[in-house]
Image (tube, rainbow, N blue to C red; front, side):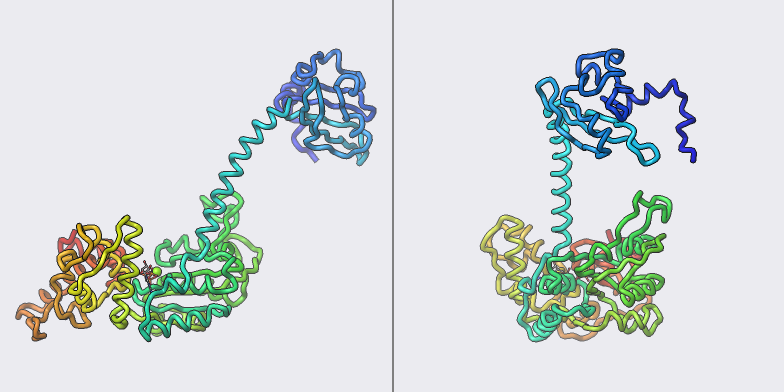
Amino acid sequence: MSRGFENIPSSWHEQIMNLLAERIVIVDRNGIILYINEAYCEFIGTTINQAIGRPVQEVIENSRMHIVAKTGKKELAALQPINGSEMIANRFPLFENGEVVGALGTVMFRNPEEWRMYQSKIQQLVDELTYYQTKVQKDLKSKYSFQDLIGTSSAFLAAKKLAERVSGSNSSVLLIGESGTGKELFAHAIHENSFRSSAPFVAINCASIPEHLLESELYGYEEGAFTGAKKGGKMGQFELANGGTLFLDEIGDMPLSMQSKLLRVLQEKELQRVGGHKFIPVDVRIIAATHRDLEKMVKGGNFRQDLYYRLNVIKIDIPPLRKRKEDIPLISMNLLKKLEKRFYRKGIELSDEVLKRLMEHTWPGNIRELENVLERCINVLDGKTIQLGHLPLYLRDQKNECDDPIQSTFKTNKGTPTLPLQPLKETLAQAEKQAIQHALAAANGNKLEAAKLLDIGKTSFYEKCKLYNIK
Ligand SMILES: Nc1ncnc2c1ncn2[C@@H]1O[C@H](COP(=O)(O)OP(=O)(O)OP(=O)(O)O)[C@@H](O)[C@H]1O
Ligand SMILES: [Mg+2]
């Protein structure tokens, strides 16, 4: 079979040999030098003419080339003393029809210093690699435990106890809760408390990954699966989570087409990478979370019923903050402690009026909104006590909120409706504008989060902001 060597003109051979490795010697089966390059001759203080045709052990100090040409056993990175220093040699036997016919020797480093220099360069790379490996492993660890889940209200304790009880099992968990209620914290805590805790915790947000990338992100791909696919392919999050937990956040936003593949992987416990044929077994515990009403989505044909059943083995409902208002003081204190550390402050307190105000608010953005509010307070606070004036405007001005924040803005303090008599369109537009402003305030100006609070797409959110001239 042609391997293309015959295409290389023989006049090139010597040049190529000189370029391939710095120092080369070739001997026949009796250890007679057939070829030696200039670099080698220079290194040992001889010339090509003087060296060729002579036994290798007479030309090169401490050579073992004649031995390798007999034994047929290669010797890699062998230390060989020459001129009082130890160089590093590789010796390879050459075969013809299965029989040893000679040997090829190369010298990679002329002395240990050269080797050490090379080694220190490699060592730097190895150190860098270890650094990133530990960083990735740390990222793949759960960051919270059940101790971080603050709250003593019965609604919250019921959810927390259930989560604690099922953390040891392998069954899928479905976390349901409004935005900012702590779904992600629960997922971390469940993994941390399970026998999988030393294996990876991998979180993937189904809503933030473009649909066309989700499949390769989850299952990985083989080399050449599509244009731009990396050489050697790529491992997906499922494989990365092997032995551990895969947290599928915002599962309600997973496109239908992807839902079928997910179901298949959950049932078969094996997957195929995109563009691959091999089945790769995976042992992964699934925790899924969503703020959407999955049952309603199933009824509307937007979520596969069979997948819903598969995920809904253990359902944990995390109550919104307005249904556990008694937890607000404790959670606020804990959040303040966290913020104090971040802002290098100490001894910050809430005034009674502020605490009362916080207890009255309905918290559509739940604990995340509370966190944002307290962070804002610390930013504008000079002394130690947070007063009403430090609260964001929307919290300062809203009085006697009812459970529906939109409705409340159209009511007087006595609760009598004060809807102006005007075209319905106008009233709806006003309500919409106020809802957007409220959501933006609750999300600390973060438009994506605000859109999530209103449960509308980001494009539609941006359009509405433009329409109502909201910056
Ligand atoms: N029980 C709790 N005790 C203390 N802090 C909490 C608790 N629950 C949530 N938090 C804090 O509230 C914030 C929001 O929590 P998390 O990200 O888990 O919410 P989520 O339900 O996943 O929200 P989303 O649906 O918007 O993703 C986090 O900063 C978290 O630290
Ligand atoms: Mg979340």
